[in-house]
Length: 219
Image (cartoon, rainbow, N blue to C red; front, top):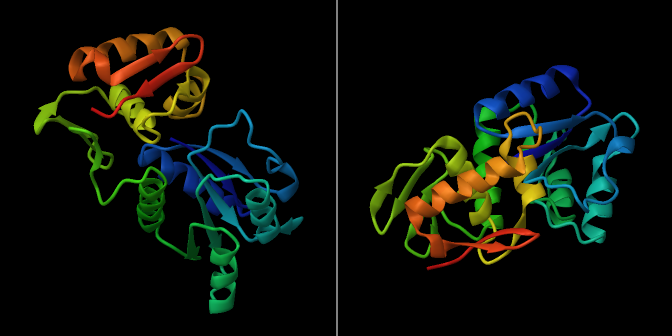
């Protein structure tokens, strides 16, 4: 999953990218409000980590602009502002969670997994799509209660489809999300992984929409 970090502090930004990579997330790091996307059309971020105190603007204004434009990507605010009114303003303004600096990166990763589960309308540690069960933290899959042996890349791919079951996910979106450093993955490689997944969980579970991408079907 690809994460957008907007944080001006050099040490924290580097630490976040390193920690997120260890947790299996790829990331893009921006340091100024002016560099933040105005539109997310064609961009495929699973979550945004947003600092409120940026050198050229207020993260709260970015949050308001995005939510006002209908951007639904989960957003976690990171800030040294610990006052209750600051937290309430962020949450009421559309943030999905709020973490106060300094924080442990393991706590941030846990909060990210929680907001991503809520966004995917899943609960606790197991994502359930029909009789298919996925455990993001352990990269384990089960079908009708029996373990399914998936490679890490196969698991990442099925998890991306499981974020929006019943919705077509384009190959370009999958390509950007699958590479640990954010570089796109060849479309042909995605087709091969889909073929392998179908052989393991059933062809009927992953539907091809020609010229667009793939959709995970609830069974």
